[in-house]
Length: 375
Figure 1 (cartoon, rainbow, N blue to C red):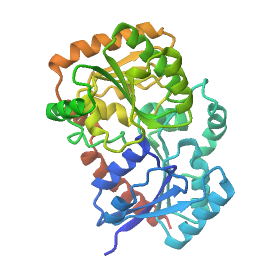
Figure 2 (figure 1 turned 90 degrees about the vertical axis):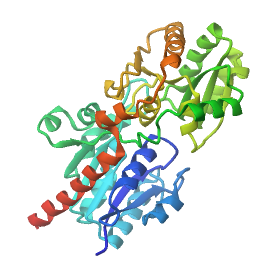
Figure 3 (figure 1 turned 180 degrees about the vertical axis):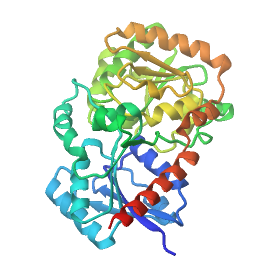
Figure 4 (figure 1 turned 60 degrees about the vertical axis):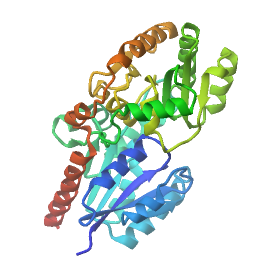
């Protein structure tokens, strides 16, 4: 018997949390029962097509969402061609568009998922607020990576009625466990053996508060000449970040490694992780870092759900850079002598893909059965 195929609406599949989350679920479902078709914008930067193909999945590249009418036309063609029973959209308030197409194509299970929130200082917030009430119009199932995201997008009334199902941000906790040998090897390779390494992995965007992150590290560098900032990623604010690095005179203390997929070794090599975001959903990098025993420095705009094992430190964005720097250096000094893996704690908190993926699989199958009985 062929597996049921579900259409996964990814949008832009770039390196980062959304891609990692979806792939972790895909790797751990029973693919003899359910297969994923990944529907991605054609300008995506990091589609793991070979892995998806090897696992039996398919990739469809469609017109980017900036050309929304052609984007929807492309989705309509694919939905009709494959007669999906499940369409699961991962683009938060932008889910309005694939959900509308899915309903038009009579897809029985239409899942709108919330992965993020918003912040007044981000220009995208106006658009998100406009689309937020519409993101549930054509869906008949609602999902979120955490309670805060679910309430923000779908509202307290729907959430309190039990209509929003929370599937936590899932990672491979054991893969992200702390390994002292990997730490030593990576630090030696990059010349960091005697350094205090502050790390960041992600998109360089307004949401991630990327320029402020450089300013925070500038304060760290003033207090600790042996500190290094390891930057992995890319994004619209890269040039602004590099200008700020030059302005602060800290170029020799910044290691920019570009976009990479082999990031697990860097969690081991780092001494703490910096994420002063304006807003987040439930950040994958936070869970991966914590699983590796790495102290996480979040802004207080990030949900407290991100503290999976008491390694999360939350500092207000209104606090000065010196406040951030002092707490970062204090945590680095205190954590290393006792650093260990926290993979078991993160898994016990419900963030392990090996246990969450079968629950997602069961959810799909039961939803299809329920909708079929209605027909």
